[in-house]
Length: 52
Image 1 (cartoon, rainbow, N blue to C red):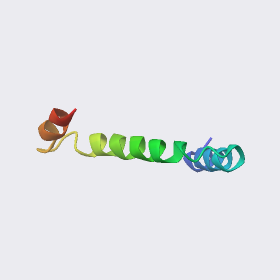
Image 2: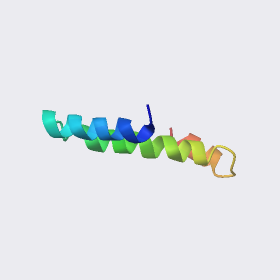
Image 3: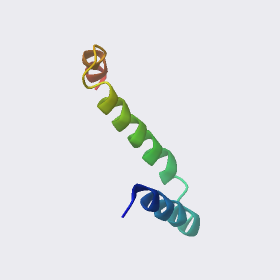
């Protein structure tokens, strides 16, 4: 199962079930995860982890 098919299935779920309030939560979690992964080895990491 590819990542694209998971995103398409999630989009169909949102459209059919009218669960639009889930979209900002999922987007925020994905962005937060990407921020943590991308800054893991950099000099910014101690500052980001201090926020949490």
